[in-house]
Length: 299
Ligand code: UTP
Image (cartoon, rainbow, N blue to C red; front, side):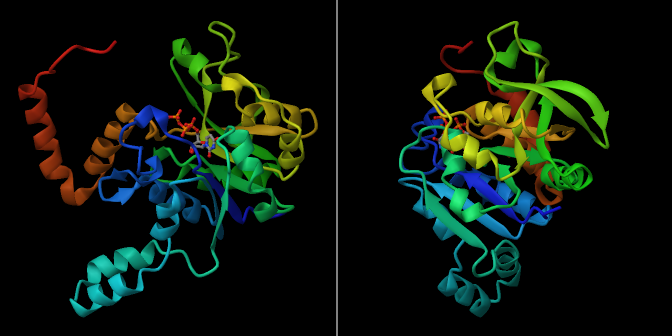
């Protein structure tokens, strides 16, 4: 069985749900506490044993490449000023030379198309796929547990979580079959099912381990929901030939592609940090008591 060595991060989306913040800044570079959203996702992949990080970028996303580059002058200045803690923090998150690759999705034709753009960089081996606007919070990273399930099964693995059944039409939803190791067999998949037709309330939360045959399927994939090339549609076709397993993630997931999810992530990760939890918890309580909404409520 081939090891999962590479991870793909599709970062070419337009981030329209987060305008005007994302007009000039990629949503993946918005900051949760003290680091950009993309850093959390890369760290999750690294914890899972990933050795090569592939970014599918687009226009206005060059700053992501800069973030993962070595800033020699900055490191030198921090060292000279004796700011060892800051320097150590930067060094810890720095990919080693040759560990990152960048390719461009020239048009945002959908997630499936973005993944297909990474085909040459991935080659003929299984790979992890992490949607960078979804960030996870748990003691063990979601991808690390998925790699373990992949080791046990040797097949495609998709992480899922429960959603309110009334919200199922907003997500990619899977049907649940029998248990296997610490996952279950996936019986069906559907992207944004019509209300009342979802096979379950288990939504795909943005973490996948896929076999390279997905690229063949994607190269022929027609546009689907939202007039975009949908990854879920391609996975459904691949499922006719290869098994898919579900991993039920029990941690918390924040959708940083939307303002609400992003604010939630900031509060949650601030409360998670021992060095700022004390002051934050008090401030949040005081704010809840004293700040009242202004203007019209949006349903
Ligand atoms: P989203 O639909 O959440 O991202 O795609 P978006 O299109 O940027 O967001 P909105 O809806 O306009 O606010 C999930 C992930 O897939 C990437 C996005 O960058 C995001 O990480 N993606 C999406 C691409 O890389 N290319 C695409 O064509 C579409």
